[in-house]
Amino acid sequence: MRATITADPSRGPGYGIIEIHDAGTVVDPVFVLRRGSDGKILSSGGWQESEKALTPDAWDNDGGSLRLAVGPAVVDEMDTLDAYRLSLPGVGVCVLVPRDLVYSHISGGQGVGGYAPPQKQAEKPVESVTEPEPAAEEEMPPEPDMPSVAASPLELPEERRKKKIGTGGLLAGALLLLLLVGGAVWWFALRTPEKQPLPPAPAVNQGRTPPPASASKSPLAAAREQLRGEARPEMSLALAKPLRKRDAGAEESDAAFLLLEDAAQKGHAEAMLLVGQFYDPLSALPRGSIPVDISQAKHWYDQAAQKGQTQAAKALDALRAHVRDKAAQGDAEAQNLLQNWK
Image 1 (tube, rainbow, N blue to C red):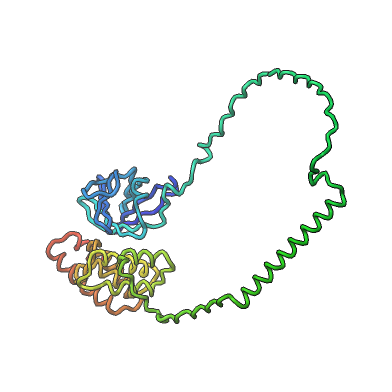
Image 2 (cartoon, rainbow, N blue to C red; image 1 turned 90 degrees about the vertical axis):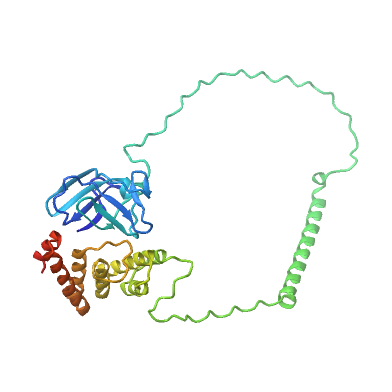
């Protein structure tokens, strides 16, 4: 069983469709969604510790896949760089892969239909105000002629004004010249010359090996930073392989899965093999929040074997023997998988 969640173009931003393959016949399609980064479970009030089943807005089942219509309460809580596990009570558990989601806040502000032009304020009637007529100026008796004690510059004769202006301009020019000469002497004689900057140190890491991750950066943060960039498969594989160790923590394993799944989807054969090991029940390496899924393990081993991975072919043979043993013990899922094994 495998599942993806994609945008629902018929309902717009914030809505999506969860498509679950190989779910079989489902009568009551409630589901539980767990986040891989912290193990919390999604409810109507956001991510919480307690487990609660969610009900889709609508659903249909054509026998091959189960389709669940969900709204912003699910879509807006998804992060394409995190890992998720979807459970159908009484049916099974699988990984839920988010792809091309459009969140509700991306739709922008008020739409055209909801736009309301601003109301014009009612114009207030203009009250006519009668201004009082200015009082008639009283005629003042003529002042007697008084001799002027000191004439202002504006009252100087034209020749004297020109002489004053010319003298002030000469003084300003001389002062400016002195400032320029003093600045030149300081620049060329008294100023301490600046030291030339040292050339940059040569890059140490010239190969394809990625630099070690910062101690302050968590494995999931480093993986998400890689996937936000160009995310070349070779670089993602180089970052993920050191995390695939027997004593790896859950966060390290989830970070490795995100990097390897992206590289595998881009066609990298070794990444396909390593993704298959996450789902393989026979693999001894830790798998973080990724559940065992024999059909997914077979799918990725098949893809890797077709690209020439001999180790994938051996893993397929061991996986088929394991399925054959479980079918002999009466496991219905193993019997069904063995009948369709190609």
